[in-house]
Image (cartoon, rainbow, N blue to C red; front, top):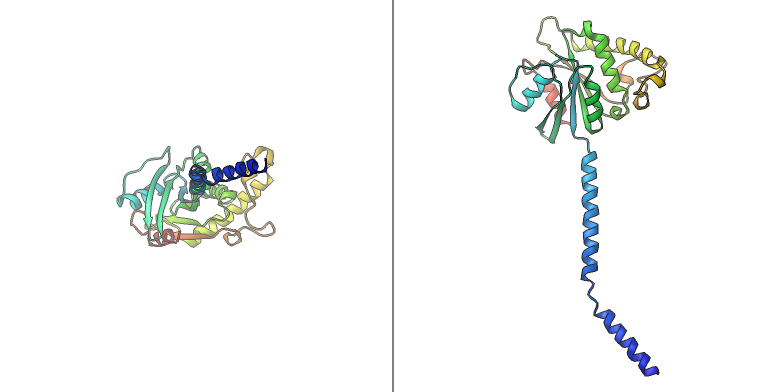
Length: 242
């Protein structure tokens, strides 16, 4: 009986030794590769690669977009959808998103792209800014107060500096700070229940002081430029840093 048990154990040992583990190893490799590809795909999807071009209608966004990507200026009209294009910089490729400036459309496209944004370029018409300062400040406040933008660099592009009636970037900065201070007072007095964006918004600046841009968590840089005259060196230098 003991001999039979020894023979059975020996046969079992031989069978175990002769088992082909190749299918099991291949299955493990397939699982690991699949998990790695899913991780890379998810990371790529969540990566911030976009520069959002934002501002009121006729502030020069689309002129800049075509100038940077096509090296030409095209006659533009009020956009009803976003324009997308890729810009090659010294540090890699950026996707430019020209967001429509119409008040009925800009919120929709901002929400669509804000979580992919790497930076914001906000256009200001230096000629009409004093007349439109309330609308400009209100739109800029909405962008800066969004949690998705809280740590992103922001350029306020003071466009049309080639025109005689254009305000300088220092004057525009002062105008916007004063107006955003008023917008902030209005926004904070609104009930959260009627403000559908309240859960995504943060308080801008310090509550014990009048607003100024130095109080913000994100870096805000004012750059004077002229898209019509191709005076874009400071902007392209900024884009090269991203």
